[in-house]
Length: 388
Image: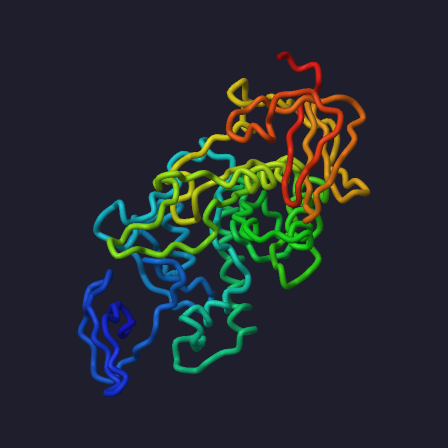
C-alpha cells in the first residue's frame, strides 16, 4: 500500500540492497506520492484477494451515493443496500446488492469473525505488525480484536435494521457471543483426520476454546439458540487451501481420470448432519464449492428412488452406550459412529439397507437385523416395510 490510495504488487525482493521491484497501480491506479510517504503491507490469506479493514478504526471517506463519510463497513453496507455501485469502473467487479428482499430467507455473511489478529502470522510464518490506526504505532492483539469485533457488530446492526425480516447467518464465525444470529454455515475441516473429541466439539457440545467453532451443530436445534435456524453443513473432498497452478487455474480432482469421491467421509458427515435439522453439501473444495462438480450420492435419494425418502425425524439425536449416535425417522434410521472403533449393533426391529450401486458392500439392499459400522462412518437404514 502506497500512500492513501495506491496498491502495488511486489514482483521481486532484493534483500542485499533492501529494495523492492513492484508493479505500480495494481488493482487501484497509481498516484503521485512524495519520497518517504508511508508504505505498508496488505494482509491477505486467500489467493487473489485482500483482507479489508473491518475495524471501527478504519478511516472514513466520502463515496458516491452516500451522504456522509463512511468507513469500510459503512461502504460495504452501502453496496449491499444499493446506495452506491462501488469503486470499480466495471459493474461486474462490484457487489450487486440485494435486489429483491422477498426472494431471501436470510443473508450469509462470510468470515464474520470477532478475532482476526491471527492474520498477523499468515505471511509464510513471519509475523506482521498490527498498525490499527495507520500511524506507525503497533497495537496489541487484544486491542486489534476488540476494534474488529466492534466493526462486525456495526455491520450486524446495519443489516438487521435495514432487513429485520432476514435471518443473519454466520459463516466461519469463530465467535461464541449470543447476538441473535439466525443460523450458521459449518464450512468444516477435519473430516480427513477425524477424532472423537473433534467430532463431539463440532457436532454435540462446544466447550473448548482451542476448537473455537462457535456453537456446536446440535446446539442450534436442541439448545434453542434461536427459533427455526437455518444451518448448513458444508464438507469438502479436498480440505486443503486453494493454490493456483502455473496457468492460474485451481486444482479440481473431479476432472482427473479415475477420480472417486471419499464415500466414507460423505456418509460420516451426512449422517452427522441428519442428527440435526440442517442442510448438507459435499463439495470438491473451498475454492470452487459445488461449481467444480456437483456430486450426487445414493444416500441423497435412496439410489434414485425418491428424495425425502426418510420422511421427518421422530426423535432427537441419541447417544448409545457403545458410542454410536442414532436418530429415528418416519421411514428409517440414521446411525453415526464418531469413534475409531468398529461397532456392531443389534437392531430392535429388522431394517433394510439402501439398494445402491456406488458402494454395494455398504448399500447392498437387503434386510438386516444387525449392522457393523466402521470407525468414523455412518449408515442410513430403511424401515422394513419399504417396498422392494
